[in-house]
Structures are given as structure tokens and as C-alpha cells.
Image (tube, rainbow, N blue to C red; front, side):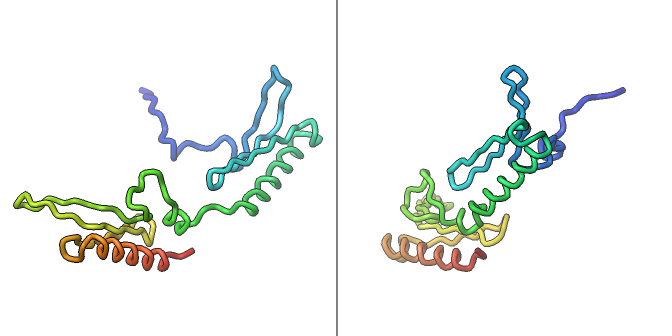
Length: 157
């Protein structure tokens, strides 16, 4: 007996084999062509390539591919280092990758430290803690920041 199971999104085959280019066929608006879209660093770039203006479907696709390649050269993808240096709204320490952490020991005593983390390779995060009780708040923060900067410098561009 046949049983239907939805395919995982990663295993689904793409209808369009060109990344960033989508076919648009709106019969009621008589709009046929290819839409090129690219987003880099929060900025969106898009263009439409009409079949009629480019002399047919294949010529419009060719123009769309040239434009997409031009956009990719003009706006390269972010590197791992770019992501490592990006400040987010969740940050409360003022430095990327440095946070104040509290841990509770077995004797119910709370310890505070500044934790610094970095991912030198994909899937491999390293973390180092600097105790506030040992170094003091200011020095622990500075040490965490310096350690983080040294790790980011080790990252490949």
C-alpha cells in the first residue's frame, strides 16, 4: 500500500535551478519573465526581466543570470568573520561575544564571570570565562574582550 510522506525541505528538489532567480507568470496581468533577488547586509536588490522586452524566455533568463552574477560580484556574501563581528539587539555587554554569566555551585553559592565565546570553525564553539571574584569586574571584562579579539583575529577571512 502506498503511504504519502512529505519530503524534508532540504531533500526537496528545486524547480528553478538558478539561485536567486524566480519565474513569474501572471496571466491576468500579462506579466511573464524572471525576477532576480539578492539580499546582502540587510539591503535588498531586485530586478525584473520581461520576456517581451528581451526577445523571448531564454533571452530574459540569460539577462537575469548575467544581472544576478553582477550583483553577486558587486555585493559579496558575508564571511564567518563578518558574522562574528556583527552586533545584535540582544547584546547587553556592549561587545560582541562577551557576556556576563552567573553560575550556581553545588553549595548554592552564585559565581559571576564574564564569558567570552568564539567559533573558529563551523560547529566548533570555544568559550572562556573570567571570574569577577578573582580579577574584579573591570579587569575580567577587559580580559574577556582581549581574548575574544585574539580569537577573531585567528579566524580566516
